[in-house]
Length: 423
Ligand code: GLU
Image (tube, rainbow, N blue to C red):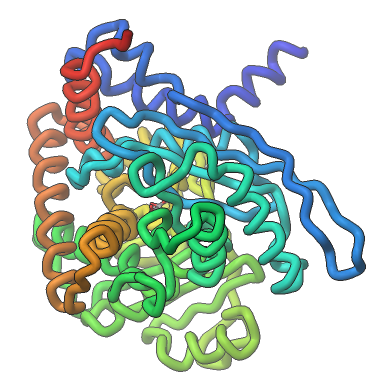
């Protein structure tokens, strides 16, 4: 009985899921055993206790993490997540995915991630600021523009990045804007960073549509999650000619087969905090959106939402993972057998970290670019990554995830091997 339970937990564990994804391509690229073992583990894990002053005058203890998975190709890079369900295993998985993501789009970063177990929706701005500043101070021993550069992730915002930048800068005695990306423009943020994850996702969906010989105009899109990635994906894809037919957020969903009026929907989300109650469509829910009749499905919320239970019912021909880790390995196999092209997270949401890289470069040079230049460079990087992954997938007769991993893991393995072991 106990054994059964741990087997089930093991299968559902997101860190084991990330390790399994690596294991599945090790043979394909002839990764040697010791290097494989090395890449299966994070380089460094920091757990911190974070006391934060609450509005009632008392302080509360939070637990936070910063994990650096591999830094052979450059400083660690990856967001910080504020969410009640954060676990160390989740942060380890997210850090490993950042390593592959940065390698796939060929930017000179390793992979890292941070998280704090908290519920920002139930905290005041002052409490959030206090928590952010103390967490920054606790992890400041391992972050920095040459060491590890945080960014936004689930429920963290440009304002939170500004507090991180300020806290780190005050500790050092001068402004260090390159310590964090996703900042507001006024303090060294980059044009285009706010929509970069969504824009990148759209660019790779465009490529996939072309590869599959499909027409963009009127193609039906369903989006699960309406945060930074999902909301802007709806906006940009609508502008591009796709028809957004269903969306959802943590409260529920809304659908309209004729196409949702995305502009009005976003206004409704800003006004009420949810897409629920929008009058331009009928009510649906988070689960139904995943199975909604569409051509392109964009999971843009949290991990493990596409499972072996719902994978057989997905109707989309393309699944673009704007979220990290939305598809479980068993579901991945089902989708592949059903001839559904899954654009993996490390490709489909890599637009965010790519423009983070541009932001970091601009900060270091103190020289800022026009938005067209940023979008153009983003498109070049993602188009190339799509083609390299697609070429590997075709060559080995495997999924786009495995194709993308072949490219990414080989790059990290090469850098790790070239640098050798110290001492
Ligand atoms: N949190 C985002 C991701 O998962 C962005 C990371 C970054 O910009 O460094 O890719």
